[in-house]
Length: 461
Image 1 (tube, helix red, strand yellow):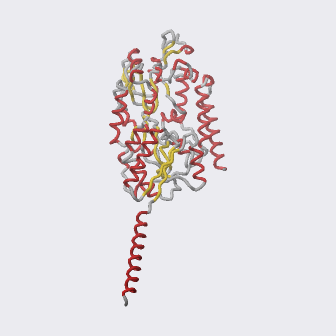
Image 2 (tube, one colour):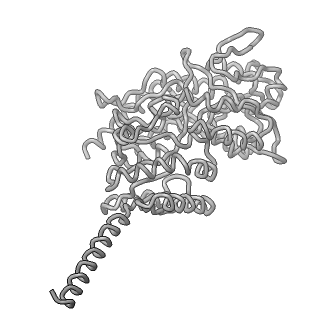
Image 3 (spheres, rainbow, N blue to C red):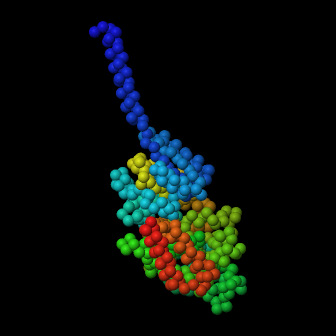
């Protein structure tokens, strides 16, 4: 073989080797793209966007096989934007943070994480079982705990001191001292305590026969920023539609709470009606005004209480009361969900574990949320304690997560948005001036009938 021929063959071999090597390199360098959609909930604020972009950069720097891309859409148009993407077959892989109401706008869209949890040996025992159960839809688990806001009793210590009353308990099951006797901290007890704390313009309490409900200047209790389903769920969680029969059922526990609330509003006058809520008396908000002694609401309500030099009263936290011996604390929760249409569910799950792992503290902080992960909770509470020095019982916060009722008070059902509007109409009727003459039993029956028609309408479609 002559030298020229040998050289040509060698050159061909070198080129072949280089080509094959480049092919291997290209295969190794090929990345799976995971798209993260933000907009159904929080995350749109410029400062939040900066943190989210930093999270994406850190992920991409440490995961050479996956490229995470972020899309942030204004909350006002996020539903339409996501609907368009899904319809076009371009559904993002991960959506969030998003609460139940936002997720329910897209029923059946979310991936069951159960197989991926088993495959990746994720330990869910770090969370309270009740918290994990919030994300169960039948046998499917469509989310994991991230940002949680347990239900609590906020109480104005100044008003309790003025009335000479014991503070609400700091532990579930603890007795309450009322009129010299130890009694259960139940919803019936709350009504009695609230009556002692509701005062009219003449200084008469709601217990006094001369009390004037048209001139109330201080109320004993409120479901602060409540929704009727969260209020009903303080007596126990329930599905709107029975899975076995497909029928809408208003359970006995919800009927009992509706009756309790009607009596508190219109018989005892210890809860402000909508007219009082809209009045100057209860500004900037009911409990924040300093004119309401107790409020049942979620942890996120710390956003709306005057703090620091603006603080006008002292307050603390208590546990929720019981119904029939059981405590139920409706809990708001945001998380990230994986679309069932994700073309790369394994890679999306890797991203999800990153958002709920290494990136969680940064995200929780920028979202102003409380972490579901126990190892991050002390730091979150420390930040709140510095802002509200009068609060002594922050330990109630993680404990209350154990009492989140399931199903969640925003759990899905057919024709969700229309059905929730019907629930809201019931609440408007109850809290409005029309509530004074309301036949609660009849209106609950009508609510059930109307909800059944709404559910059936979705089934026909």
